[in-house]
Image (cartoon, rainbow, N blue to C red; front, side, top):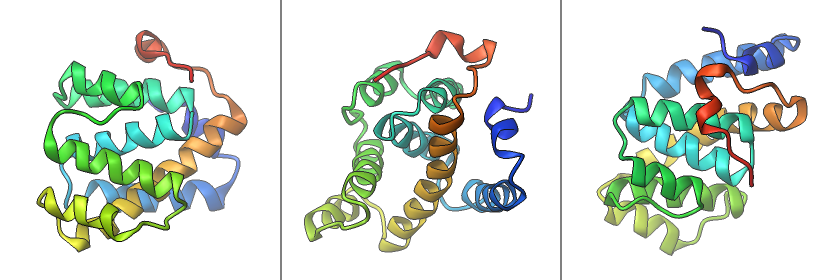
Length: 154
């Protein structure tokens, strides 16, 4: 299945090629798919992109994330799992603070067992999701049938 967001992005070769290249690197990076979905779902909620929240809710559950953790993120709260919480909090801080993290933000991420290299990798995931979140908010693609059960609004 080709997601509706791809159709919304496709008219711009610059945007679609940038996104495809970035997503290949993100999904081939250091994080597990479950960890990536934690970040992507958090970003979708933080950016209030309804399409992306529905899509990443489905993918997070498919990756085996606990329903309670997924619901927490959808409600703007961190998941209970320590490392998932650190990923979610960092992603939200990056967006809300526009990249201007303070030492405490970084320390919380490091204290959860991540290295500074992975902090930089989270920036790549945030960049990828910003493309889809902004495009989704601007173009308002319909939510595909398989994701209808996860429709969300702020």
